[in-house]
Length: 342
Ligand SMILES: Cc1ncc(C[n+]2csc(CCOP(=O)(O)OP(=O)(O)O)c2C)c(N)n1
Image (cartoon, rainbow, N blue to C red):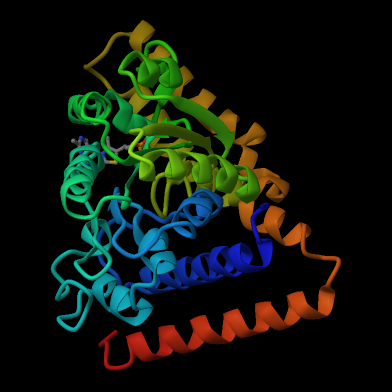
């Protein structure tokens, strides 16, 4: 049975509109601190989360908003949590990186790699208390260099735990290109720990859904974990306000902001030698030039646009769905923000 895009696309669209609203609130100063959105990951999250059942658990990373939303947590409470309000999902104490819902057996953590042990724990509990239930672990490829995630994969394989390890691979860990600090191949690494691995295009919700279906069935049948590596692009890069994204969107305004302090530090007396300065300059310039071939320039790779393109044969139905979703998100935001001091 193929996935039903008419049920997956609304999940993806709602999440995108919800996170775009979060971005506006953050830019208006109503949400404090760093903000890691999951825009660009929607196909991965929808393809996996839409197939979870009651009693299944989720261990999430610092981009857990979309998963909580798609799992059915109250969006008004999520948003109030991000606003730091005492009437938020976690009393305003967790923020976007530490969302938690006991009702949904869902826990997020800003500690990179923590989704591994948390999911293994959920899965061990499921194995004993709720046979047939599974745990999903969501993390970025940067977490693959964390020991605790490797240890969790090892135990999950050794004990045949019902876990699906979902690696959302955008190839960047903040400002580090992950392949410059990662040896070998991630899927091979998982197989080396006895965890079957599969790679998918994380911008294609049908492909993710199909691979997740097999992995979840495998886990529910007591056959142990799977490693699902899904490649994607974070539309806002690591966090809102990421400088290279600002250059990409507005080079004329942003370039002087980089060039002036860069020139000043290049010419400053004392400190590093000329050779090191030239090398440092080359690193910054190559990062800036990389924006010229940045995948975010082409929205055809956007998972939400890709899912939408498959539904265009029924324009009236699509329009209705989009209008309803936009209205729903608008009223969630209005009700969450009501009473928040600006
Ligand atoms: C244990 C730990 N080390 C370092 C950090 C700082 N940190 C926050 S996000 C991040 C990069 C994570 O990259 P990845 O796992 O690929 O996830 P992405 O942000 O790309 O989704 C780092 C190093 C942290 N939060 N936790």
